[in-house]
Image: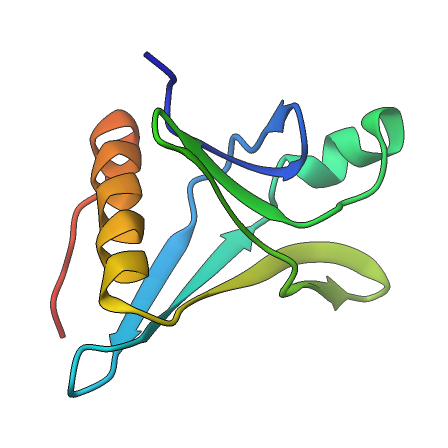
Length: 114
């Protein structure tokens, strides 16, 4: 059983738990997940293990990935990362939700509907 995890550098698990915001189109055909990490651990490790190459969500079904990753800087120092994952079909949405359920259970996250 593969532990659900998020990585920015392949092989290096991100220890910081993100704030995740989900939007879904009215017809349910597509959606967007935005992950915000404050002071992610990848900033501590990136000098040792390499550069951020993307956003990888890994679980027992495989890997979901995105290259839509941006860093936030305060006074010239990295302070956060925002990653965007776009789902273009109901099948991709369902797959993402299965990952999030596993990741949430592993990390004690809860869903709050607004």
